[in-house]
Each structure stands twice: as structure tokens, then as C-alpha cells.
Image 1 (tube, rainbow, N blue to C red):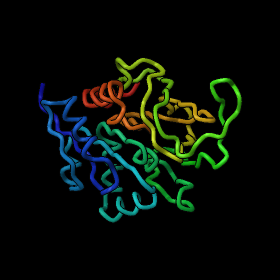
Image 2: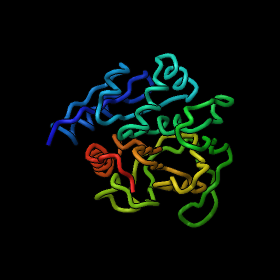
Image 3: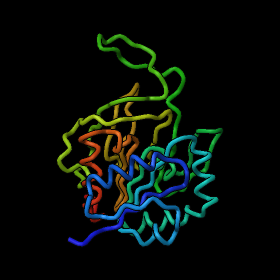
Length: 221
């Protein structure tokens, strides 16, 4: 099997070291590069689009580095994995920071969980849930997708976020998670896979997802 190049987009807003190390672990025969160089990203076989922090800062850096068009081209031409705020950046807009226009690669908006988010306690009583949603939670798989290969339904992944995606096209939802309400935790469209959780922090199931992504040819379902 030919060696592949996996580019992790570096725009200063992601846990790039742990993401790259996790990819190197699951794909030891492939080349993992962390870069904001447009030509290197566009020449890679697989691209990972990470993100943490405020979406206003993320979008500002993406546009300053002229990576918006690069990400759009990648989304149309090869397997792309967007993670956490990277997933949110693919949407039309976000409520965060008073309203931010995003990349409009996927149809939907990013919403705030709210200060008064309520959920059931273990005994069934209602309690106020903390925001951000932080820690391990289950993902219910909503479609049969190659990136879910060898990952059981309702497997637990690691989340850290105060905002969630609301899709305009619900058929693009690849995974859902409960936190007060049911929210979209994974999206799949053609050669795009996007996840709200952090696979690089999600131990066995997260590593399996990254391995599946590296082996995925970009054909969804």
C-alpha cells in the first residue's frame, strides 16, 4: 500500500501536537505534517481541520492566512476530518462572539447551549447542567459510515464545548449526543466527516476513528 500524506491544518487554534501524535500512532507508514502552507495542504491525501477556542478568532486566522478557499477546495476533493471548532467553522454562521460568519461549506448554524440548560440526574430528577459540556459522553450513530467501522454504537468520546451545531439538512447527521437536549455530534457529507468531540483525546474509540479516517477513500454511504 502506498504511503499517504496527512495534513493537519495549523492556523494557531488547535491541539495540533496531540492530534498529530495520534495520527502518527494509527498510521505509522504514512507522513503526518502540521502546516498552514496552502500548497502542502492541497497536495495532501487526507486533511484534518482541528479547532479550539473562540470561533471569531479561528475564522479571523483562517481568513488572514487565506485558508478559507483552501479548506473549501479540500472539502470538494479529498477526505476531510473537521474536529470540534473545526466542525463549527464549516457551518454558515455561529451565535458565538455576537455572531460570526463561517465558511458555509455545510448548511447549518452554531447555537449556544444556554445558561439554564437542564437535564435528568441519575435518579430522574431535573438538574442544571454545566456549560461548557465537558467530559465523556455517548455518540449514537445515525448512519452506516466507514468512519464508524469497528466502533460500537453509543461509544463514549471526549467533549469540550459550549456551542453545538443545528443542521439545516438533518440527513447529514452521522451522530447524536444527549446533553440536556439531543445535539448533532457528527456530520457526514460526501468526503467530509466532522465531529464535535476530540478523537485524539478519546482513547481506543477515538484512535479507531482516526484509523478509519486515514483508510477511508472519501466515499460516504
